[in-house]
Amino acid sequence: MRFVFYIIAGFIFLYSCKSKPTTLPKLGEMDIQNGDTIFHQIPSFAFTDQYGDTISEKTVAGKIYVTDFFFTKCPTICPKMSKQMLRLHEKYSGEKNMMLISHSIDSKYDTTITLKKYAEKLGVGNSRFWHFLHIPKDELNAIAREYLASVQKDTLTAGGFTHTGHFILLDGERHIRSFCDGTKPEEVDRLMTDIDLLLREKSN
Amino acid sequence: MMTFFACNLNEGKRTYEMTCGNCHMDGGQGLVKLIPGFKDSSFQTNRTEMICKVIKGINDSIKGDFMPSYEFMNDAQISNILNYIQRLKSFKAPAFTDKEVVTAREHCK
Image 1 (cartoon, helix red, strand yellow):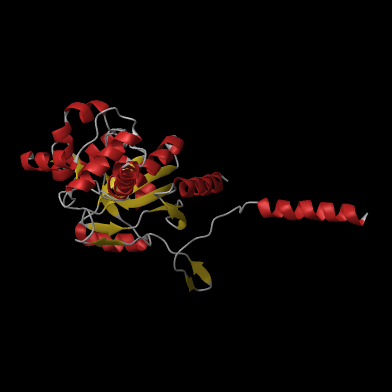
Image 2: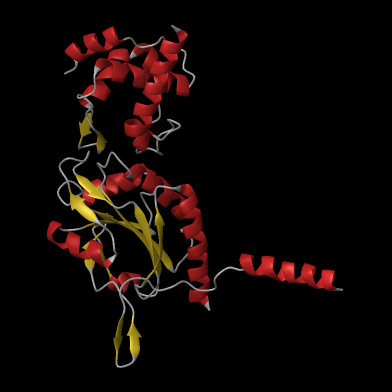
């Protein structure tokens, strides 16, 4: 009898290990105002994408999005990141409530036209799902900081910039909900499960 | 002799993965139309051009093609990389020699 109990307890224990979280945390610094928790939220923004269209907080309202920081001439980690972003594009481009946003950190070289060419070469030339944003030089650090991303001009690095290779996942209210190393396929696999979770949370 | 040759290929692999592999990918397949893979025919017939691309890089702002210059690499590093790519892709072109790189370097525009 006791033996059976142990077997059952063992199964329950194993099962509890396997159960997945049902919701994602809201990341970043939080504040308490009048008894309410105020979570970190990306403030209003407005940048131009590869089509010359303005992408702002209004465009992403109610949509979850994955974002990163890159530049087209980047000879270090960016192509590996772009390859992983392409996987996300392939899997999710049918989702109406989702977007991909890549911020260019090279305001000088990465004009709208350059970004358009880059998108075309990646085979996403007509995509309205993946937006490549031109970020004015003096606004870059502020927006990167909001996404908890580090971006720096660095003449000693190949390409002239050092920057994070992270993919950051945001919900429909611009709260950071997850992130991963965008150069590693297995990390992006994990992010995909978080995306699925967030998409379900949204549709509920 | 064989060990010596294998050593150079390992060195080529290391250098390739540290520099070239970021864009051309570790398997040498490139990325869609953004970054080309490698062609056996280029290694057969456009050998000087191949070496010069590594040395001078590519900077075509009209087409939007860009590759950094690796002029700082020495002749052996460049030949090791090219030979490693050949092995990686099972190409049949003859191995690059350091001398070939020296000669090409003088002719690169």
